[in-house]
Length: 233
Image 1 (cartoon, rainbow, N blue to C red):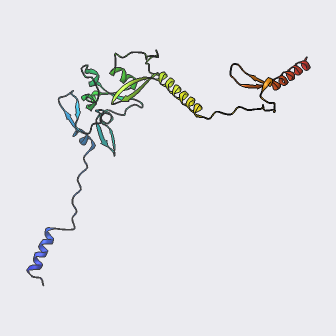
Image 2: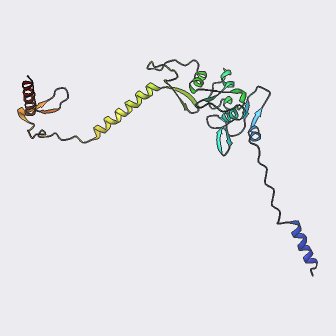
Image 3: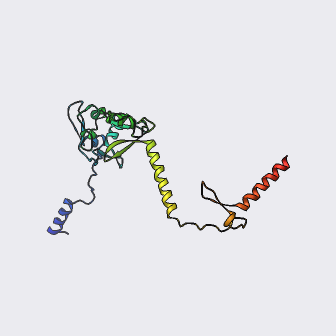
């Protein structure tokens, strides 16, 4: 059985086997993938990041299913864990007095582990701005406990903790005052709690607060005090 047509069909099936699946690509080691996104010059030079960069100029790297700061990954991978609460300072930026910083700073894209060092946020800012004033406009010191580091447009800035607390309280006070002003005025009572009318000679207005008091109730309270003093004597 068969014939030229059957032989040709068998040859076609042999050319396109269905029992074999394409081989899966091998997973690239994370170290190799990381170094593949760097441009490394001579020894001691910066490792410039050629991958993704944020608007602030910092390198980003996809590791273990999430996007992380490339310079922090470099330190943790090549040096060791970053102490809790510490930032990573670029030594190359600190040593370059001509660099003005900001999003265009190439040191922010450096991921050379030899150029990275952990330090507190206050120390990091003091290195970045060594000539800044030591006190805020209100005279509060820019020390470790009173200094708050904020990042605006990719630049680290110092803020006075005491001044921030004062401004927050003033903002809340203005909000409470506005809420009180928006409430409808309460109608003045016509009688005291014991039924005496507020009017004529029976009304006493406290000069300091403007509060209303009942003279009849005040007189009765004073008589009870005198009676207690007389009984105690």
